[in-house]
Image (tube, rainbow, N blue to C red; front, top):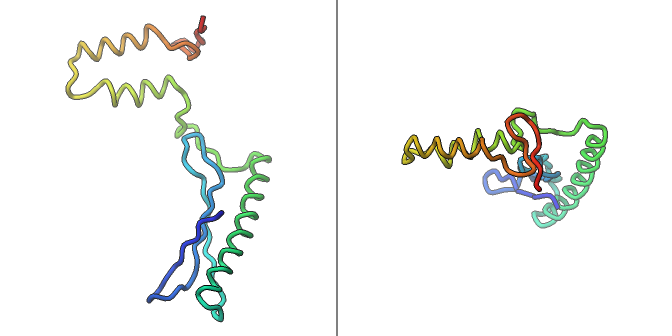
Length: 137
């Protein structure tokens, strides 16, 4: 179901804003589409809200069908490679190590110990520095 928000001006509803979530990208962020729908002027507020719900349902089906079609063709939205964080080694080196280990309170020897331990023993099933996968046995 699309999210429906009323756009008001001087206390009167002038239009409705529809938002639909298509899916999540590799980082877990929602891929969303938006549109604005203006109700006919002769409708009461309650009937305008009902008409907006029907219009939102129709629009949502249309947008989802178009997105699935684009996804099959390979032209749907994809996160650029420089923004992806699905590489575990780069996540540890660039994000986790910086935030968790290199704090202000740690001494240089502690940082060197953790950094050396990370490079000596890669986790099973993940690539080491040479790009070779380690076995889990």
